[in-house]
Amino acid sequence: MEKENKLSRRRFLAQAGGVAVGALAISSGLSFITEDVSANGEEVQAEWPWPYEQLDPEEIRKLGHLGYYQGACCYGAFTAIMNSLKEKVGGPYKTFPVDIMRYGEGGIVGWTTACGALNGAAAAITLIAGEDGYKGIVNQLMGWYTQFPFPSDQSNEYASKHAFLVDKYKSDEVLVQSVADSPLCHVSVTRWCEESGYASGASERSERCARLTGDVAAKAVELLNEYKSTGKIITAFTPNETTESCRTCHFKGDNYDAGQFTRGKMDCEPCHGDPHS
Ligand code: HEC
Ligand code: HEC
Image (cartoon, rainbow, N blue to C red; front, side):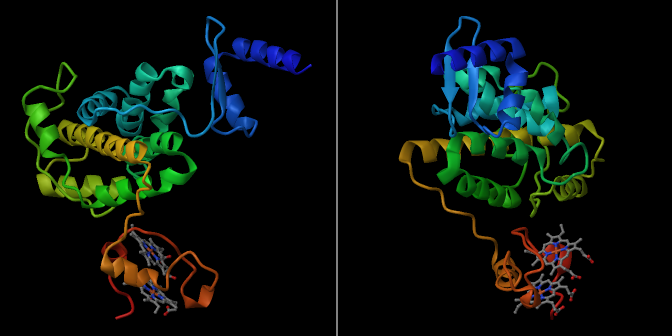
């Protein structure tokens, strides 16, 4: 009986094809459990977290940059990791519909909310690190991003020496670096434009985001490598002192009157100053 069920499910999945399998897994509440029936009938089951093998951050930096050219920031960071694991691990990675991440471009189709590179990297981290690991790693990545001067020296060097994987560069200049102080695409892009003097539609700005995408994907893989090799939970990022002081009252809590009608970990000051002083 059980076997019959499995067989008919297999047949259905084989007919439904790869993309539909992902959709089915999500719609049937099986989140992150997919059944991959490959052409030769081999069945691969993956439960959350998905299998991982150590990746080379420098290779990932280059793939992230290339992925940006192919499908923008979110897609770039995500596919750098997922396509590498497709080659190294295979299994469930072989049928994952990576095009799902195209929406993340420009902080979700140009709305400039969360930086797409962060969004894409966080999705891959979540799949790989699982229940115990993903929040700490994503927290670290978010916090690191807010303080890091993008694009990295490493990425600037790859571009100027034509060591990335693209044939034709949007720009091969060594680009000005800026710290976003925020995980938002809006703030990140705007601060860089102000720092560099380039407009948001300039190919240099696009190139800056391509390098940033590589940088974020590389950092994500460094954190994943560390977590997977040591098994040590990566602790959550601590916001800066001012923000922490605001969060003593303004946190996700039950006491509305004491200030818990809001929540968040972003740096409060750039948007609010200190409204209480
Ligand atoms: C001791 C607790 C406490 C701390 C610390 C605190 N707040 Fe508040 N905050 C409140 C409460 C309670 C309210 C609602 C009542 C009011 O407006 O005073 C409020 C209101 C606000 C408001 C809306 C009202 C306004 O005046 O504009 C903003 C914005 C705000 N806080 C931001 C911040 C920021 C940013 C920080 C850190 C720099 C901070 N708060 C620190 C308790 C706190
Ligand atoms: C990217 C900008 C931004 C950041 C960063 C940000 N906020 Fe806000 N916040 C807003 C906006 C916009 C509103 C809505 C303001 C309004 O309704 O007048 C808001 C609303 C609030 C309110 C309610 C204001 C009111 O008038 O009642 C509080 C309190 C608040 N934020 C606290 C914080 C704290 C604490 C942090 C840091 C942990 C923070 N915010 C980070 C933009 C931001």
